[in-house]
Image (cartoon, rainbow, N blue to C red; front, top):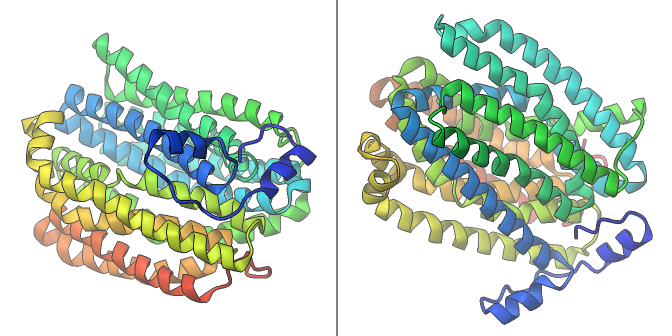
Length: 447
C-alpha cells in the first residue's frame, strides 16, 4: 500500500493484496518482505511508524514530567484529557467514517473529504466555544490554569482539519498516512527538547508546542492529499447522511474506550491532587506501550476489508493471525515492564513518582486487553460492523461506571486502575465473540 499515484496504477497496486505472510526475524528475510507489496509489508511499515510515534511521545512525556514535577505534570494531564475527550465528541466519529468511505468509494473520495472536513470543522468550532467558556471552571479559578485550558481548546479546530486529511490518507495511501501522522509527535518532541534545554518549558509552553505541531500536521497531510487526488474537493450534501450515520455508531463504539481513556482522568482531575493524577497518567501511558504496535494490524486491515480486497476465507485467516500476533506482542512487552517497574520508574521519572509502580501492576492486564480490543474493533469497522462493536463495548461501559462509583471514593487512583482494567477484558471478549459470527467482508445496510 501507500502508492502516491492515483488512478489505474494505484488500483493495480492494491489488487496485489493477499494473505498475511509470516514475518521472519532474519535481516535478509525482513528486507525481502519489506520490498513486497501487500498486507505484511504495510503492517511492518505501520509498526515502524507507530514505534517512532511512541518513542517521540514517551520522550516528550518524560521530559515534561522531570522538568515540571508531579504537580504541573498532573495539571498537564488534566488539560490534555479534557482536550482529548472534547475532540472525540467534536469529531462525531467522522475520521474513521472518512477512512471507510474513501476506501470503499474511491471515485467520490474528494467529496467525502470536503464534506467530512466541513462537518468536523463546524462541530469542533462549537466545541471550542463551549470549552473557552468553561475554562475558568475547569481551571478552578486559577488564572494560569485557565489560560492553559484556553490554549488547549484552541487546538480543537486545528486538530479537526488535520484529521480530515490524515484519515482520508489512511483509506487511500497508508504510507503517506503514516508520514502525516508521525509529523505531529516528532515536531512536538523536537520543540519540547529545545524549550527544555533553554529552561523555558512550562505548562503553557508545552500546550503551545502541541498547537504548533498540529498546524504542521495540517500542512503535511494536505500536501500528501493533493498527491493522491484527495483534495481539493466540493461538499456534497447527499454524503452527510452516510458519514453521520457511520460516525454516530463509531462514537457509540468508542464510548467505553473513551470512558477508560478520559473519564477516569477527568474525574481524578477534580477529586485528587494533581500529583496523584500525574502518577496515574504515567502508569496508564506505560501500559499503553503495546497499543501502537498492535493497532498497526487494525489500521492496515480496516481499509482492506472495507474495499473488499480479500475473499472470506483469506479474511478469516488474516484476522486469526492478527489476533494471535497482537496478543503475543502485547504480553511480551507489558509483562517484563511490570516486573521491572520498581527500578524502571525510579530511573526514568525519578523518586517522586514511585506511586506509579502498583498502578502499573494493576493496569498491565488492561493494557493487553486494550491493545487487542483496539485491533479487533478496527476489524469490525472495516467490515461495516461498527454497530456490533458499539453493542459489545456498551456493556463494558456500564461496568466502568459502576466500578468508578464504587471504588474511587474508597481507594482513589487504585480504584480507577481497576475500573479501567476489568471493562477492557469484557469488551474484548464480547467483540471476539461477535467477530467469529459476522461475515468476513464489509456488509451493506448496517448503518
